Image 1 (cartoon, rainbow, N blue to C red):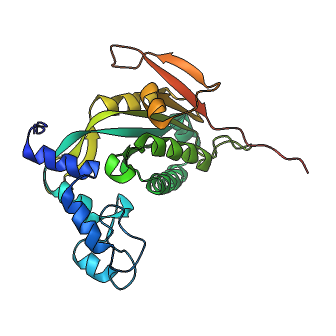
Image 2: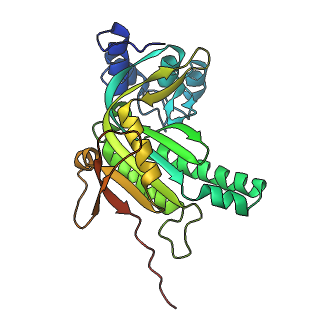
Image 3: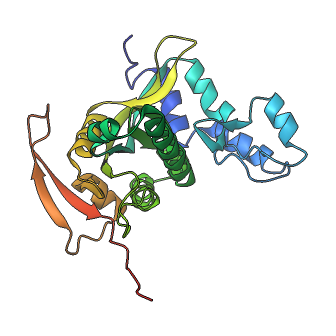
Length: 271
């Protein structure tokens, strides 16, 4: 199914919601913020606890499964209708290094437990830093950071999430990582919206920005995040002594320059 053009009224509506500029959301927020109590949906201020929470759940404004810091209504309506808009955003792809070799060394049950632990850890980190957990694919997690959830700091939040995710999976730890992870981060314009056929539509991101982030994750070594100049500039990343790489990415006609950010090795303190 074709995507709507940016001149389409539906695309304009999507853009307003995804960018956090839709006046209806502002009016709803002004109303709901007076109903006790927090924590609340970061978009519409619907309360998730307190006396107002049961009513909010009846209204479909309970926590959204893809990020429980936001309510299902704010994004559920979008998922129910096909469409979307091109918006500035940041994509984070993170996947395991050496997964095939590891799967050969341990049982399927052990591998399943490891992946479950990673999924839980990654989801918690992305949620904490206001990302959308797009999907888990095999040993990979995909996060989308959009202006409606992060303001103009979508690149900042993505880099913060990546640093914490590397640390949370043991990359840089003296004992070595329990999940050797490589991360790719890229900022740019992407189509964000609901795709698929109802009732199985899903909120996701499409386009070259997404493809570049995915390729970078594949090229990153264990404990590394590869950050494009676009993301580094948007996030105000301190270049300092960071390594620079010039990469030829699979399927891309032009090479790309990236900055390599590594998880610092843990300091071992002797007793």
